[in-house]
Image (cartoon, rainbow, N blue to C red; front, side):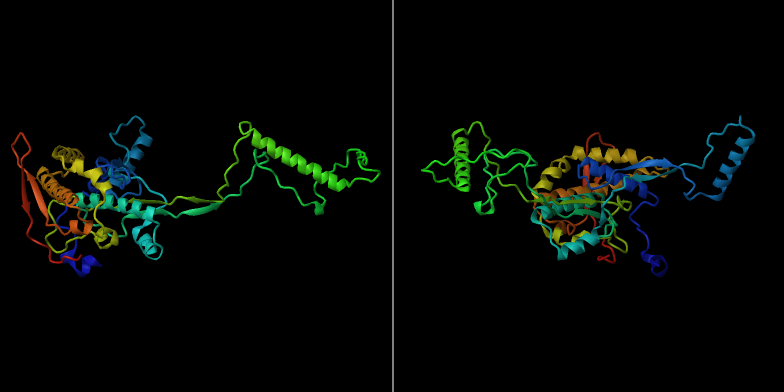
Amino acid sequence: MHKLCCPCCFGRACLIPNQGYLSESGASLVDRKLNLNVVPKTRVVRLVAESFNYARIDRQKAKLKKRIKEHYPSAHFNRMSLPLKTGSFQLFVEGYKDADYWLRRFESEPLPPSVAKSFQLQFERLVVLDYIIRNTDRGNDNWLIKYVAPKITTQVGGTGGRTMHGVVTPKLPNALGASKIVDLNEPPQASPKPTTGGRPSNHLAGGAATSAQQDSSSLASSEDEPSSRSPPTSEPDWNVVNSAFIRIAAIDNGLAFPFKHPDSWRAYPYHWAWLPQAKIPFSEEIKEQVLPQLSDMNFVEEICTELLYLFQQDRGFDKRLFERQMSVMRGQILNLTQALRDGKSPVQLVQMPAVIVERSSGSRFFSFTQRFQNKSPFFSWC
């Protein structure tokens, strides 16, 4: 519908066509180099399957080779199956939902402070990744959140049949007749003889007194021998709170690494820039994690070299266009490092002017030229 109703705004003129799989794998490479851990592991692979889209002639060739092989087993072919297809293969993540779903939930059910801090750090890692690779397709529906809410587990305390040392078990009241346990299998014992002038002694009272004396002596012995008994156990926790867990997964990175900043019809903004988390300045944790590496030009060129080896796998690889892609990425890194040093927020980062840092050719040492892009797209809000 978009292509039919508004063909002038369809597509992205700043991207190299048919290189989405390289962009997916390149985002995983940048994520791994900076140890952000927000992109599921992605690699470039070569696979074949009947369900893939093949030309009719390729399918007919595969069927013909199969029939020839059945009739002439000694026949040899370099490839019996359908042609291999090159693409990106990404690890599937379980338990995640669209960020839009959880962001709406968080508006009515705010996160606990500790979980909110963890989510903010994860969000800042997403911002760093998207800004470096200049992702032109980052909405709230193509990055994922996995959230496990805290749960209260009730535990019943007990000794499990073991005696708790140093704890005196209470006795039932004498009125209930429970001061003594009688075994019916044992023969009855003789009643105690009277101790005073022919008057019989009270059996229950005597039993209670004896029991009280035993309890007091037992308690006294436990106090006199602290080394032989373990200290009284503290009161057990009846409710145990399982800690919450939140993670972010940055998927759908196939429309990144442009060879120029958007300057035609659309600006392709980052939709996370409208979130409340984007108004909070970058934390010290993210500064300590990425700023020392991004400030080192040798490290930046190391990333560019590894991306070169990756992008060279494409048959239509163009070294000139690749250098333009890296010029945009260097400019993004330059803006990001400046924003981190100045204590800016993600929303202030995206408002910085677009910069391009070009590497001079024919030089043994790194020589770079910086320039700003003055041309702006027609629509700046989409």
